[in-house]
Image (cartoon, rainbow, N blue to C red; front, side, top):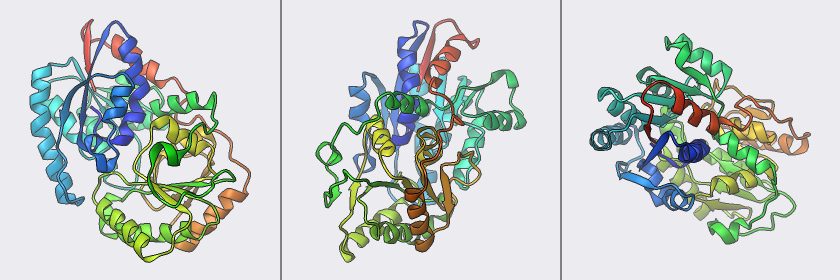
Length: 377
C-alpha cells in the first residue's frame, strides 16, 4: 500500500526486488494523496518505473484538519476491506506512519491477513508516533530502519524473531545517486513550478516544511517564519509543497498570501520531483531547510546540512548533519548561514547502507507463510 508521495521513495527499491523474486507476486495499491495532483500525484511515475497498479483508492476528504484526517482514515478502511477481500493477498505491507496507514493495518489485521510494517519503532514529536506504534502492534512482521528502532519494537512486546533491521529503502536510492551525484537536469525545464527562475549554478537551498498535526492551528504562522528567513537569503531556494495533513491548508494559504504581499526574487515552488531527481537536488544543495524526515534519513547518508525546524522530527535518531531550531525567523536564518559556512558534515549510515530493498524482498520470500506469496503493497 502506497498512500502518499514520500512513501513511494521509501519503498521503491523493495518493489523492484519483489518483482525480480520468483517466489513473490506484487500487487500494488495506490491510495490517498498519492493519487492527487495537488499533492504531487505519483501515478505516472509508478507506471513509468514499470510497476503495474492493481487497485486505486480515492479516499481523501478535503479540509486538512483533524476531523477530515479521521474521516479519510474511516473511508479508507471501508474501501480497503473490500479490496483485500477481493485480492486475497498472502501478506499486506504497510509503510511508516501516515495517518491513513491505520486503515491499511486494521483492514488487514481484522481479516487475519499477515501484516508487515516497515519503519516502525521510531520516535517523533506528533501524531505520527501514535500511528506508527499502533501499526506496530497490529503487525506480525517488522522491518525497521535502525538498531534503536528494533529495540523499541521489541520493548513494545513484539517477537524478536520477527523484528528485522533492514535499514531504510530510501537510503538505497541515495546510494544509487551517490554513484553519479551530478545535477544532470534543469529543475525549471523539467518540472516547471511557480516563481522566478534564478541562476542556481553558484549554489541554492532546498525547503520542505510540513504541518505538525498536533500543532495544526499554528501551521500558518510557523511556515511564515521560514518564508521570512528564506526570503532574506542571497541564494535561490527550491521550495516543495507540503503533504496532505491537518494544517497543510494553512501552510498553502500562508505561501500564497506571502507570494501576493511580498517581493520574492529567490524562491521557486514545486509540487513534486522523481525520487532520484530530488536526491540529486539535495546532494548539490547548500542545505535542506524545514522539517522533512528526508533531512534526518537521506541527508544523513548524503552528508547534507539540515536546518530542522520545530517538533515534527523530535526524538528521531539523527546524524551530525542536523541543526535543530524553533519556529523563529532569526534562529532559522542564523542556522542556515551557519550550515552554509561550516564544513560539510560526514556521511552517516545510521539508517542503513543501501541494500534495504533486497533484504526486505528476501525476508518476505523466506519468513514462513506460504511458498508462493502475493505481496500487497
